[in-house]
Amino acid sequence: MKRSIVLRLLGGGLLAVGLFCLLAVSPRVAWADPGVLFASPTGSGSACSQDAPCQLQTALSQAADGATIYLAQGTYTGSGAAVITLTKSITLYGGWDGAANGPVMRDPQAYSTTIDGEGMRRGVYISGGVAPVLDGLIITGGNATGFGGYGSSDAGGGIFVSGADPLIQGCLVISNTAGENGTGGGLFFYSSSACIESCAVVSNTAPWGGGVRAIFGAPIFHASEFVSNTAGYGGGIYLMWTTAGTLLEANTFRENKGSSGGAIYLSGATATIRRNLIRDNEGGRGGGVSVASGCAPVVLSANRIQGNIAERGGGVHIYMNPARLDNNFIVENQVSEGGAGVFIEKAAPTFRHNTLARNSGGDGSGILVGIDSTAVLTNTILVSHTVGISVTVGSTATLEATLWGSEAWANDSDWAGGGTLTTGTVNLWGDPVFVDPDIKDYHIAPGSVAVDAGVDAGVNVDIDGDPRPAGAGYDLGADELILPSIYLYLPLVLKGLP
Image (cartoon, rainbow, N blue to C red; front, side, top):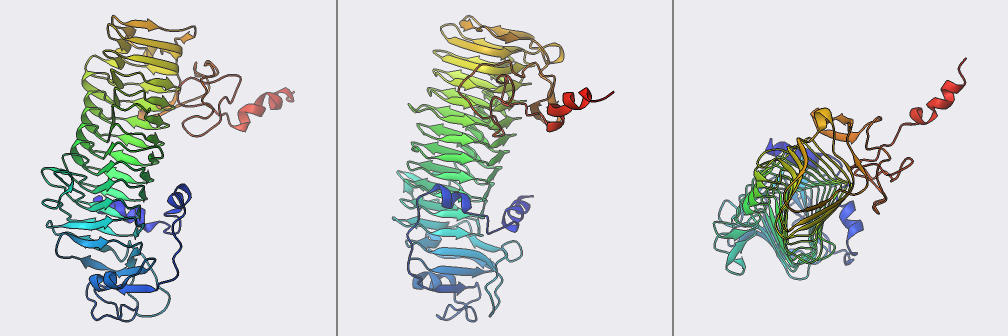
């Protein structure tokens, strides 16, 4: 299963990989052509040519800024603190077919290139103001134990980056560790605006950031998979003090575990978390996402947060952050204590156009507004819970335009708790008419009470990027119903019939 992830990512369209990062970040330095080098696990000599490849370390020692090194199929090991140390802006291409002549051909699926730390060293170490490229590599067996990297902690078992801005694309980072006191089991970024695209980060471990930890900088994670990583904080990713421009977009997080933030944990971080699938993760606080502290709001937009498990906040846990949640499906999450969908503590989040359904366990609340909190919710579908929203004494929730469900989709109680709750002028009880909730499709279908029932909340697109409003008014929930043309023209067709 794990190897199939990299085959799927690396096997499809290398030309498309990296385009998002190239468009999203500042232009890279254009170097004069310093040449192309070739390496092989069985290479020798110093020619480093296509017909006479050399050892990887020989190629690295010869490479100038802007050079490209093609790595033939096989496993590359090393000595010292890392298999590969990069202090220049060079490109490493895995998957070279090893042909001695003719056009240089790459196929990382057929000719897998593995960087193996053998459990004794990091896979890759990158430092300084450089912008190297890693493309089509498997990074495994990395171990940062004893190599330091962040304060008193060891950091970056698979890939360590400090003060550099690499592009890492089409890579599998699998089964690496930062050790018992480490951070960033798979990847560690410090003061970096790295871009990670179309990668798979699988089965890495660390106390802080099992898959990834990023501190400062503005890294981008795009179209990647984070699977089965384990940590105390941030099973998949741990972001700390990152700045504006930090982006997690179009990724999949599944089966990660962390005592806080099964998939994603943020502490004092500024970040946008957009269009991700966050499912089947497990955490103590925040099975899917845990947002902790910070003056700038963390933005969660157009995510599918489903089937996650936690003690508090099955889908999302928000603590001391003015988070903003727009256009999210938060469904079928579970807790043992409270806030099956969302748990809020000492925070003032804003919710616009969210769909919460079938979250269960613990106190049974879809949303729990905990101590010292103020929540504002507009255009919400909040259905099929024991309690739709529960507000703790001393806290406040203000709602406008809410669908509470009915019959099979009714909450046992729509609201509860001793806090202050204002439900606004638009409250509906009816069938949301989801497309196919049994396969977790919570888009709305024709006949939904949610259609045209909302107010203008300042959100102009829905979870799929479709425009709002599409009809006479704004639809409730994450989805705006877009009718096929057959529905739009049907009255005209019927009118012409005898």
